[in-house]
Length: 152
Image 1 (cartoon, helix red, strand yellow):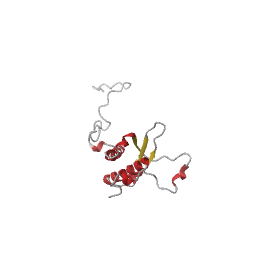
Image 2 (spheres, one colour):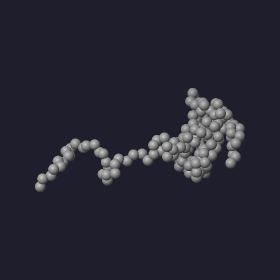
Image 3 (cartoon, rainbow, N blue to C red):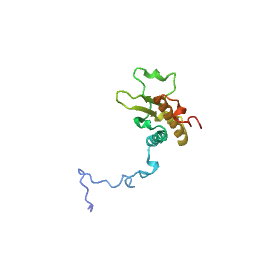
Image 4 (cartoon, rainbow, N blue to C red):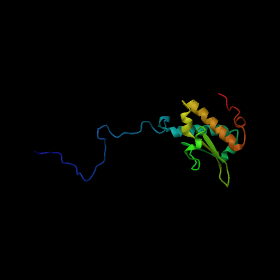
């Protein structure tokens, strides 16, 4: 039996032009500039940044504070798993400035996301958390930091 097609050298893989089902290589679902392509973490970080920018107009000293987003709060190694048994999981926290280090405000993404249903509700809760943490760091009341605090 004569076979006109010569087999490809098995030791040398060629460029893969199609997947094994013949539909071609898969690409991204949406281009990077489209909001669909933004991850939940990136969208959440944007909500925190929007809240910070809103407060910086009134409080320019916030430029000296770092704002961070972490997935979940850490359990202190000394507290163990019982550290939160009597308290709710925190939504945010602060680290005061000392020894030349800048003060920090931390917002925990997963606890905030779990407590909210939509983007607007999430944005409102993120702003409340940021206001509360900034107030704690500056030694003020949340109403002083943002006069609209607590309004729906």
